[in-house]
Image (cartoon, rainbow, N blue to C red):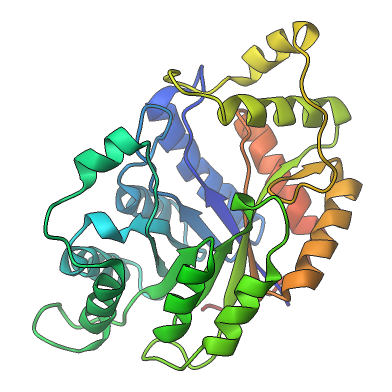
Length: 321
């Protein structure tokens, strides 16, 4: 049975603003728990339209507002941080919420180049060395951390490099399908072939992260597609278009037709999305799906997760991990 993750990129939309984006993320976690999702993850993104530069803070709020759902990151941008600091933070989170914390790490970018330069520090260890350090610190039982079960550690990535690293260290792998227009099952298969057991994993485990634009009304689907188009061309904006803005633009703006073969976003009414989702799940045979949506309206965002929950036979969220 498939496990589902509600994956929130915590974007800042007009009318909601940065504070509202963070509060809505917590409400989305509560809704995901009610709907039976297994996990709730938040992304680390930096910049004016990104409402979550410190995902561990939102993990605290979301875990406190819920009771059973696993809560975590996808992902902490490990190249910017000392592994021991990350391990210490998530060790504390796991002690506060035993058996419910996920630590997804990745290498970004998570920001425009100018912001990435400000986050970077000279003399940092290579990414693979930081993963090795983080894994050792979470599992070695040294005096570096208080005694605790480790959080569930995931490696996120969009290419063969991430798949190789996850396999090498025996970690679960979350593949970012939304970064690709075509399906890339060969990357996931590479991970499975190269996997070797590690201290936090005896067998390969795969999640596929997909972006969805789904609504009951075809008109709403068209607006969601428009929001995606504007969101990917948002340089210079301090917020992404609100739902009201999209409605106002609709009568006067010509949007490009959706590409039916584009798998970077599964767009359509429920029947259409269900058909494309079946193709995706058959291609990857993944253990889990992580679903994100670029939707300005919280109610419609929650409805998207409700529709997806109905499409996918899932394992019980209460039977962690």
